[in-house]
Image (spheres, rainbow, N blue to C red):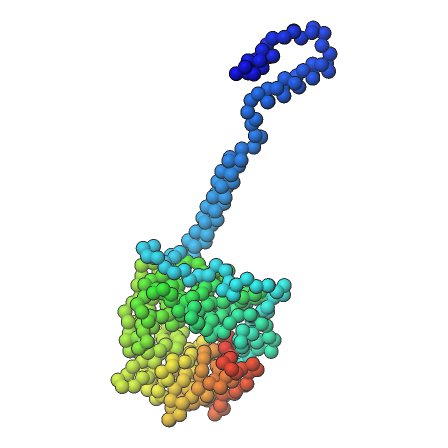
Length: 415
């Protein structure tokens, strides 16, 4: 306290300031007083660090809120088109399936695109193939995609690239998107089963005891809808704006319209496989007819309108309907022989006949006049209905790189 008193006496006592003071002396005295006042009191920082941190946090929170509102706006716009919910049910926790990242891990990216911009449509009879992770175009160009085994492949609309469904693994299936001129990236992973709409704009999958559906917009899955599903129920294909579900391993199918709180419809127990639809909306299916199975056209409630039993469709469910709805190419047994059978659904052509080797994969109709598939030997089989009706057998082409468990996959669509 003594030093404090001495400091106070030093301010008020002592000889008075001379009357004659030069400008330099006055400036020196003012500077000394100013410095003395700053030393006497606590120093105030020109910037408040806590205030800065709080301000930055508020600005970050505002930016995230704006971004969230923007995404919500996009989802709301999509909801107006028929897909409503941005997630699964709120009353139960689910295992996320959508992947934010790349299951392949961090890797060095190529500076060059790995896939070309696809042409509007393949030339007559030409198809693209996926062979051991390599895209082989109809003109023979090869592009290494750097991904694992693929089970199904489909073109995106508007020449946007490709969608590839990975083979099933212990971790489930992965849906890859390969944008035109870009590199593949995963849209979702860990799913038990994945199906795409014919136009490549929607996807449905099963995971963690639920059935999901979502739209594919600009390489993102949006407007996701989910419903609980019993064991064994999996999506099979899209039928218009509905998803066809297989009830279980023993057959039986039902339809689900993806919207919040809308469970799947009633099971049609005698529907064993569905191959596609005709322009009038009827589905082409294999149905149980007494002690055997036959082909049938199904109405909107999945009940048979007409049934045909000239041939016995195979139990593997492999087959597809042509885009114009006239032809069905399907595995079956006819006159004691197994093979690919061509069926005229309009009933105006010659009787059903075997036209090629057994189908071992997906049947792809490039258009109403050209079909292709991979046979059990891994060869590419191609046919035209007008030629096989005239007695010609499907052509067979060996594919380079096939063998040791590697099989080609024919690229479909979009319709």
